[in-house]
Length: 277
Image (tube, rainbow, N blue to C red; front, top):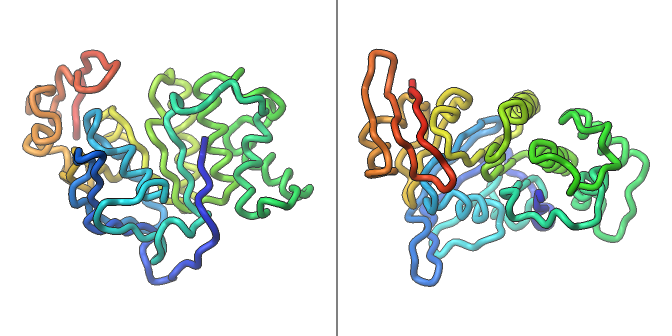
């Protein structure tokens, strides 16, 4: 579920929302991230793509302050991530205990803890805010439903509502579209448009290159190192894609753009055909 990070830290008005500087992470001697540096400004939405084990989840956890880098630093509005309550991390659904006995409204209210303080009970205005957040994601009618009874798409919408209740300004979503049908995916994209209107900065990890190219203004290509960050047509070049995916991918240049064939690099994926603009 979306994770609330630390105590309140002030924002420096002249600082970018997110600045990652030469971040390196090693797990028991294994290199997960290698000298990653970039910055994002308010309201940007970035699709983070790369093969399994590329370091996408690790990067998100470092940004959220859940994991300390071996080298380098992360700053959110000019300060380390551990002092912010404006960061929301939505993990992969496989990492959530669905048997936990809590309903939808209570899950979303958990996003208010940073605003309330641990020892304060929510007031009527907090429950009103929770209801508004559920309305934004189209889940108000299921406020009393146990979280484990929801479909995958509904669960993702609840997590996003929780981040909204947290009043997050930086949202990190780790593969929120995985396993969802087309209708549920469209629901998530509709919510992403609402987040854009609210000027929330969003990073979304995904394995779907074509979806990343079609739906996001910016993409980040990651395989332990940052291979590219920018517009899809600039980042998804044959050289960079082969550098990221190696022999797992075949690329064919057509009159309509770059065609990706047999992208089987990702766990559970099947052969896919698509064009990258």
